[in-house]
Length: 167
View (spheres, rainbow, N blue to C red):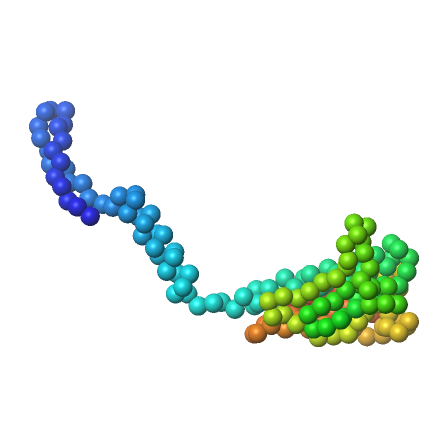
């Protein structure tokens, strides 16, 4: 920052001193870039999977609804097969091979960022009702998604198959 007097002529042709002070645009941009770069290293990691738990819970709820809608539109029983704590798929129940959608994509899904799932398989009959072992479920079934410091719960109601996500 520099101070330099500048003499300015007014309308009456008298000289008035004017002091110019401040930072140039280049100096300001350089400081912003340096602060932004340092903040990448100085700020602590905010627990990435704490923000992904709600996203994964919503996605799992959407997959349950999708399987329910597919079972109704195809007129057959479909299963959301929990294959591991980080992997699940939509199958026909006879095999563990994921079914394919109209585009030919396998209905296979994964959890990432350290998110895990606890719960058991659920099937939907041709009317979209949740079933277990060929019988309609009689009580709500739930799945818990866990991360390092956050959990979410996805549940399905008997008879109606209403799916709720609670964070």
